[in-house]
Image 1: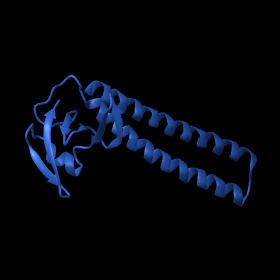
Image 2 (image 1 turned 30 degrees about the horizontal axis):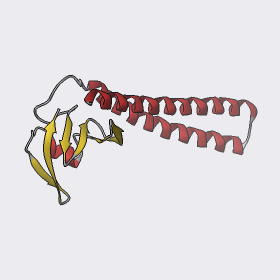
Image 3 (image 1 turned 135 degrees about the horizontal axis):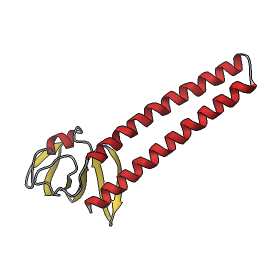
Image 4 (image 1 turned 30 degrees about the vertical axis):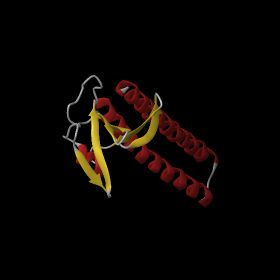
Length: 147
């Protein structure tokens, strides 16, 4: 199951990278075409707006590339005894994939939450094994399994 989850998240992140790269390319082409056919204040404003949008997209692309780098570091063949980067943790009847913060997914009918080791829950779980319990915002968490 861990390999499926990892592959799903890698594909999700790659799809996001492709979308951002396409959007950035589209803005670049639009800016080049606009530069050829316009002059004046409206032209300058339009180019400035495109440039700002391109900067935002580049920032988002860098964030997604950082997520990809984290996912690329994970070896799903390693079975963990204690929670570490790449662990699949069962807690409170739910599955947590310790990697980077990503949307929840469903794999084989199981809901999976990707959490960052730096998140409040990730920080508490890191380095602990089956039987460990902790509390976040008044909600108890109990490690039932670590893969």
